[in-house]
Image 1 (cartoon, helix red, strand yellow):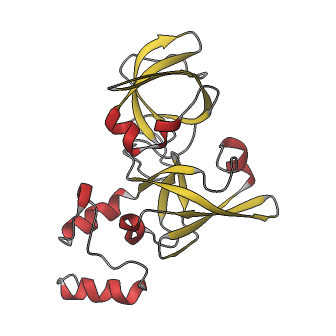
Image 2 (cartoon, one colour):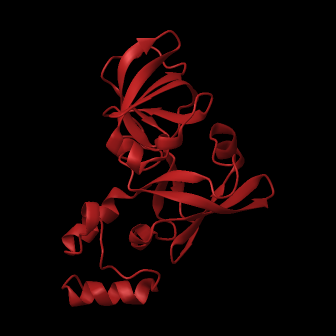
Image 3 (tube, rainbow, N blue to C red):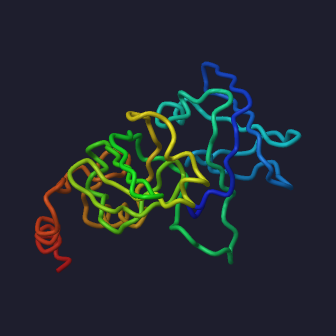
Length: 222
């Protein structure tokens, strides 16, 4: 598990692709590193398979590449890195599993002084998990949803977050890894609305609190 608080901006040194996946050499300052430990890489939980001077190697399966932005990762690209939580660590963000639920894209950016408002579009099946003031993980970064409507949500990146991450970089249309709040997944499961990949297929999308309250009432939770 992770917290969604980026510890370091690492750099992909090398990418070796094959029929069964890809191998990444990543530069970072983490020390000491251990073989087998988990490191979230732009929100994707990957295992350290080899130690390198000033970094490590990790492997991504074909399944991981198919469902994350790592499919297009290139040498020289910055990546958000976070080591797994230890019991007793401060949970400054929210509980993050490192299992990407879908790929979204940046659709708008608006400067707000030193801060930046960013609007993202998500796959329709993830829309029911967007809740104002709720949590979401974008490329491994724990963020608070500022507003949500339909398949879009926006966040406000403060100056510190902009300096510590690459979320304010790149063009509009750029793809991002998304992980919705794990608590929302369990609520959906308990409501008996689990669909593809354990995510809901029947919850109302973009219909507001009234529809959700009606659903909870009809299913015996209110």
